[in-house]
Image 1: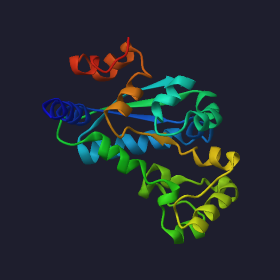
Image 2: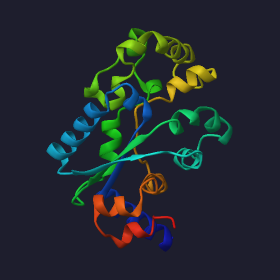
Image 3: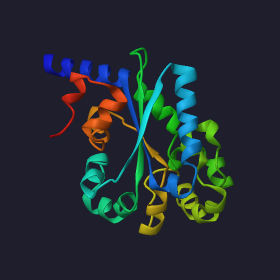
Image 4: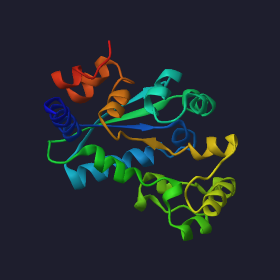
Length: 214
């Protein structure tokens, strides 16, 4: 129990000081990554006193994909992981003053998954706008027709246990950004960066060293 409390305290400490976001290849390919960067940096600075401290290009590997999505089956990840490994992603870095949980803030700004949208929004088929979070931009106007089949599958299932063929699943997983839910997720994101990049963004912190793999 004592070790569990210590781990929880450590996670709260890291979450209150450091944040990371992956901007995925689809955001870069669709040329909306600068818009997303500005949105996140502005929202965090103006509303939460959290500073944007750096952005770095990374090339995600198949091993990274497994670490980033541990709850999905390796077989499934292998099939859609090509999209994440096919071109560069960007990692945004944020630093806070310890007052708020940065991961919770980032997850709110990320927005909900398509499957969690109201039924009337799914039936309409248009995007929700960035006011509902970054993922509210999905689908972009030129992809609206392609997403129609996904929306219909979710509506037919009532929002849960919907099945998508691989082409639709690949489209579904193109959801612009990824932000951490817990310390393991944060560690996986952190290890996409080099030690030099981590120090540039966050300075020297012994606590972060515990999360960096050799």
